[in-house]
Image (cartoon, rainbow over the protein chains, first blue to last red):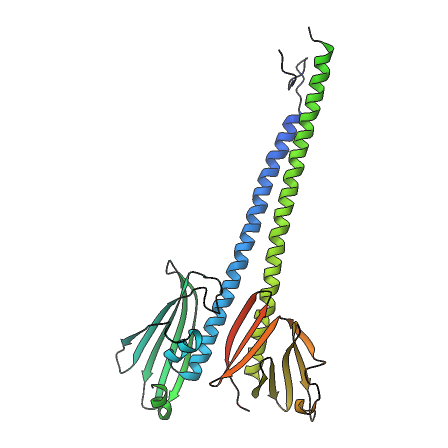
Length: 168
Length: 155
């Protein structure tokens, strides 16, 4: 029994309709892949932009608190509460000191309500002189691959008469 | 020898196949349009809510830095003083408002100071707290909240 579908009619004339439809569907599939890729990229960029803005707010807050208090521990306590960090103390040549704290940001943090899988690193260095102490705070955000995402640096100068209060 | 019935059957099947191809094409178009509109709506809504809350926090913190003094009146009201002018930033309903009191008109002389202000940003909530010389500003809109600290200005 012959098939009722005849792509090539009698007489050898080629039926171009089905070939045209196949070409149209192929073009449509390529265009839809490009469009969906563009929308996926825009969604990813939107999430990246929001995460960057949150890092900016968190770093700005840390810098403001540090410039007011002059203490890394007080900055961390104000931002994240007590007991949520560990400070590593380092010694610097020339009478100064350095301290560093690395925190994994989880979904419990008010700055990042969704777990962003990034780390916030705060490093404090202090250079003492007779007139006072210059403290510099570096706030840096890194992802799990140790790739730097955002960084700011702020400073606080504490005159000699306030140095004893700030170091407590 | 071909029968006449098989020719009509062939034409019917060909027509049905071509209609099926058109149907597949239109269904694919509808799916693509639905996915794209859904993605665009989600991105646009996320951007609007993020912008409102983030811009409100940045605006308020920049205003505090530029002012001579800042006084937290209540949890959602902040009074800024600069060159004799007073600016009251407050939250009412679903937005952050700002009202300027110029010259001798002081905010404290008004019966209802938090009325008649200019709408600045849409926000579901605005919380302003002052602790240890720092002012903490938190704004939330459509589930997105942003928080920032700013050094306070003594009156």
